[in-house]
Length: 453
Ligand SMILES: Cc1cc2nc3c(=O)[nH]c(=O)nc-3n(C[C@H](O)[C@H](O)[C@H](O)COP(=O)(O)OP(=O)(O)OC[C@H]3O[C@@H](n4cnc5c(N)ncnc54)[C@H](O)[C@@H]3O)c2cc1C
Image 1 (cartoon, protein in one colour):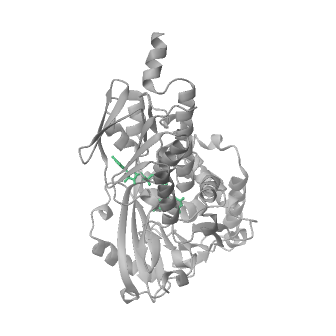
Image 2: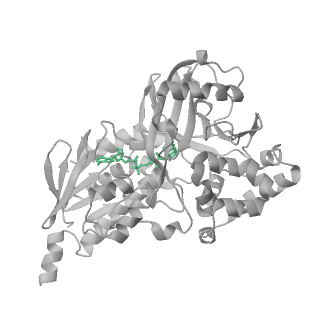
Image 3: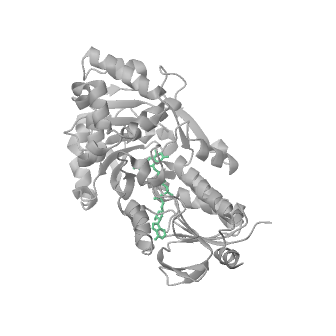
């Protein structure tokens, strides 16, 4: 028989919901706090055009096996669509399709011999398994050497700068390798476009089903209520939430960004705290347009022009057609920025107005008249910056505080953060709780009794 614990889960994104679901399956009592009224965190969607659409563009890769397994297990596998995607690269005033190996050879921004070299380097990265050798070197250094200065400066250099701004030179080659490697896993062949996944009706279908399953098993979800303070009371953890309610728990699973976790648990040892406070995140600012017309025929357009202040343009309705959205076209204009960037404080109107001349570069016919509505969404902890020798700086899921576990996007490595890996770490912390019960480390009172005996 399993020991039943009272477990508090902090954060109702994909990691927190998955952890809560798994812990309930183990027979524990679970309370989950999500400070926003809506569950789902970065993957949540909001109502538009008779359906729902993510605040931030979302798709799955065919290598995303953990989330696909969860979707199947929850009985919503029939909602999963796998569709071909069209990738492009904008540079020197035009769009270059970049969907297959042949497109790399046609990439006119660099001379033919550079293209051949780019094709070979891409092929090599797609087939390397031992990523550890990339840990010690920055992407900029490795790529400049492998591709030559010109190809780097015209193709991958601008994309790294568009995503990481002034920190672009610090990003690890292990991170970059994984981006290339995983994309191969979403292809049947190098000459065919990749297939990407989407949940028909939005990621809310998964989020709602997880919440339903949690409630069916007796879990308590406190949406719109954050955790304000946590302290140890003998063998228990006491949580005071933002409504002033205090509850007692045997274990805590936190899925919030590392610096917030460090603030919530000031008693952490210095070496663990240093790992938390040393994590630096890029923020995301995303302008979403509801348009009468398409901007291009590309789904995922990487921007390689330093004069265009976007990281990418993701035209969702070139992936999931406008017929799903009452005929409207939905276009995300994405920008990753450092925490001090003016876009984080700028009015939505200002962000929109600033984008117009640049959107005209992509499509000279674009006009503000096309836009029925627009929104600007911001996420501060959007992308942990993965620097060299990152593995040594990842905080462990089992924190030094007994009965306290951490599962957040900064612990995902060498893969880039994504919903699949939030499911994986949610599963993982639930397994650690099970192991710790088996090892007699939980509940804490039992550990003390064992030490006394
Ligand atoms: C622009 C953008 C595009 C993306 N595109 C994709 C994509 O195409 N495919 C993909 O798979 N992934 C994508 N992702 C990444 C993916 O959405 C995230 O990695 C994943 O959703 C993170 O889930 P999480 O549960 O780990 O964290 P989060 O979603 O950040 O959840 C943490 C939750 O904790 C809550 N919280 C914080 N503090 C407290 C507190 N004190 N008390 C209670 N609650 C608290 C927050 O409100 C939040 O809801 C994208 C992300 C962004 C920003």
